[in-house]
Amino acid sequence: MTKAPVSQGNPDCQFPAAPGSFNGNAHTTGQWWPSRYGADDVLGTGNELTSERTLAALSLVNEGRIVELARVLEMGAPTFGESRLFHQVTLAHGSLEQTRWGKDGNRVNWFEEQVTQIYHIGTHLDGFAQVGIDGTHYNGHRYGDFYTPTGVTKFGMESVRPWLSRGVFLNIAKVVGVDMLDEGFVITPEHLEAACEAQDVEVRAGDAVLLHTGYGAALWMVDNQKYNANSPGIGWDAAHWLGDRRVSLIGADNWAIEVLPGEQPDAPMVVHQYLLAETGTHLLENVKTEALLDAERSEFLFICTPIKTKGSTGSMVAPLAVF
Image 1 (spheres, rainbow, N blue to C red):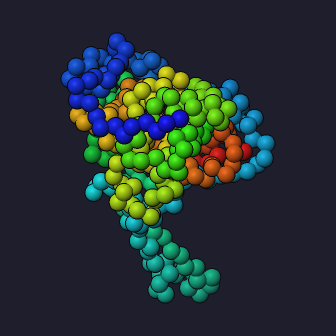
Image 2 (tube, one colour):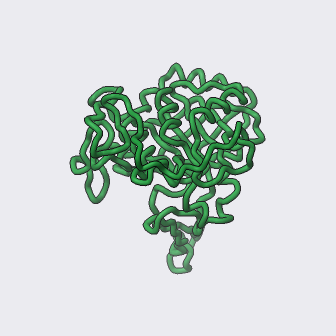
Image 3 (tube, rainbow, N blue to C red):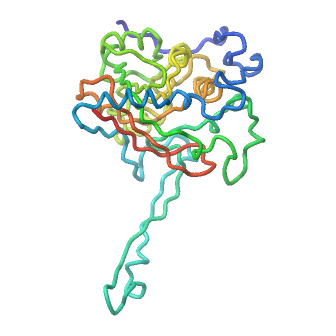
């Protein structure tokens, strides 16, 4: 397959959309809700995580081999945006001579840490409260109806289902014939279909689909400035290809998952809007996909569970692939 051109955007065109769907322009789109899962739904594609699909995913395990898919989060790790940070201080108050318990006996001492951070850093899960379309979020909920300064009252991480599901790994860089896709490279449905054909795998409803662009393996903690900037990723059509298949989660080895700069200059993060706000599809960013390169398995048991922090818009996670 020849390499697709880098997207430069086209201000004269509109993203195509079906009637009643988000068309990529908040000013011209009509009402794009209620959700396909019902007007009262808060789970989105979590509805696709059925017990039958869990049992089918468990049947994929025949080696007992575990592959860790999380990046190690540390101070100095890539953090898109000035407001995103991770700062850790180790507290030694439990080890000071004067504070040890059992002074005349076991004299126990301990360390603890104090962490200041945002949950949208490192390998993490995006919730539906993070991104909206002109102030409207999943299933038509206005931001003012669920925002509070200490946590959202809807779509918090406490309501997200855990994944014990089928995982599908698609090596898009290999399809294109490179180790790392360039920034601005648009992943199209043709790339997704070519990867499926080359790897003899099918994307199905409920799947957690992980895309390898080579960006993370080459740049994480090597060139953080480049990693934090523009990146390859799925375009509008590829997002709909995945959304039409009702996958439960889309992950990639970069921070945005979608292509940056975007396909249209006046529509930044439009794929996030379509997936999180319209279809209710969770996104898993900064995945260590290179850990799957040597496995030579395109499908596996995928395990991921968010931290149950009430009212949080995202969660750090440590997903696993089990073969």
